[in-house]
Length: 174
Image (cartoon, rainbow, N blue to C red; front, side):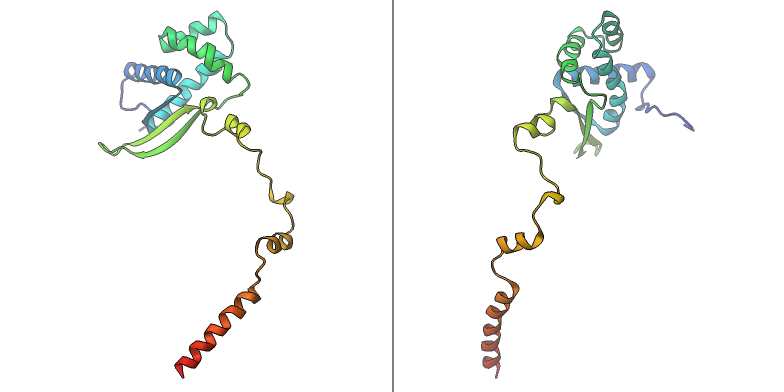
């Protein structure tokens, strides 16, 4: 039984799991988003987010700690220069997991894990570039004004148009 065992072993030994998560973290840092299985994405999030937090403090000690996890100089340099620069003001929650559906070959649930600040499609960057934030209902005009502007025809006009047609049908039926 796995009472209180919160780590997902991913059906791997400890060394294999450590290597897998390290490789996934390197690719996530390099490409900013990767597609993998949902279980691996969920296991990767608690592995990579503390590394990103450590990258905010650009000291030799933190670089060595992160290098002990990743074992890749290029990924460490990318993390401490590009990624840490963008996430500097964020207090946490650096990654986002989006479910993609089932994989064709083995029906495994797939997901995309991405770094939140590097998404150009939506988020803070796209909201400031496109249009201002939408207003809430409290700021809108009253309902009677909006109905009169949008629909000049009222329900009475619609009924008068329908009524003559019904009369013709009634005469034809007699």
